[in-house]
Amino acid sequence: MTRLIALGVLLGCGGVLGVAAWLRPDPRGLGTHQQFGFAPCGFLLQTRLPCPSCGMTTAFAHAVRFHWLRAVYAQPGGFILALGAAIASVAALLALLRGRWPAWHFGILTPYRLFLSLLIVLVGGWALKILFGLIDGTLPVRN
Image 1 (cartoon, one colour):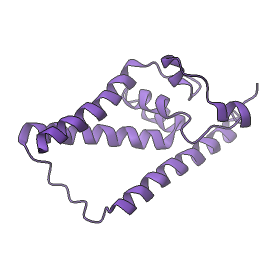
Image 2: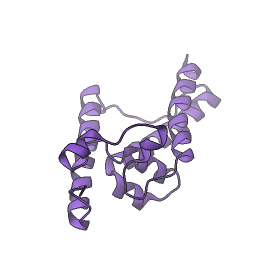
Image 3: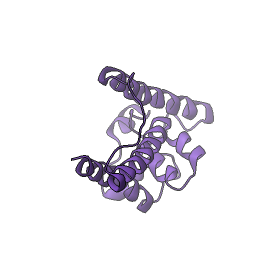
């Protein structure tokens, strides 16, 4: 069962990172998702400020290229999630090969703390993205 779960984690996280490597990061720091044919962010169009996930795809696309400062600038939370996906991929590969997960101890990481941590990454990344944009003059977006 361990190997089956590891395969799922590896395919999921590795697949996301593989797609990110295929995409060309948008130089604006957001909008990379439009390469899939998706519409621009409606929140951004209405408020002229990014939504909590604006820049995530761009951050992943930069992170897989080791353009880490650009990834942080695009979406700090997205950069952290991309690193998490990379670490999870390596751990899953090890578990797939060895039949057991690496001996990492996350005893204090309860489901509540994991949820709270992800919420902090999302909201904190959003706040930093807005702050970076206000400082460099790219926000609010001008139509």
